[in-house]
Length: 207
Image 1 (spheres, one colour):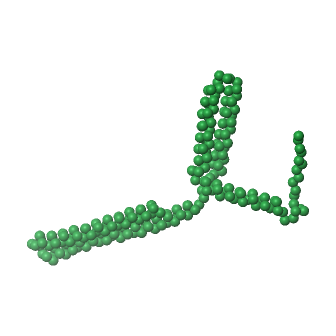
Image 2: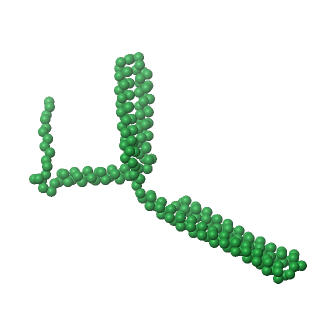
Image 3: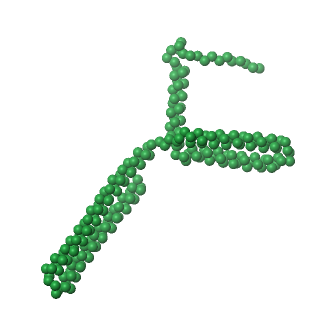
């Protein structure tokens, strides 16, 4: 909306600029008319007047043509701005849906990061247990790995907020939650309990 207002102001200033040029040109033509009238007394007054008037009309016609073209350009810009603004409003209401490959890759990055951290942590603990002289070095390495691990997880979590799909995810979460609740409500409250399927579990106590 602010960009539209700025463009409208720019168009208005542009038109005012050309209007001033038009007025200035008209004044210059008037001055030329009087200069021609007073400093060319040897020529016939009628011929000079007609020639100057014809030139003035030509310039005025040209200025009027330019003014009409500018008005048409302004109207076209206003229509385009209104159309673009309407499209922007409609686009802002749309939900951007990520591809399935993107969501799977994002989740795989998260899970693989945790798996790598589990493996490295386990390996470092084994080294520390087997070699006492390496414990200080292994402890420093584990601290550094833990910091990088937490930083990487934060980056993956931030990716969810900045990739533009958070609104879609919340919508899908809500739809899934309502679906599960509806299914549980239907399962726990069947229309005919005598015909409903039952799940039997045997409880085995192990001392």
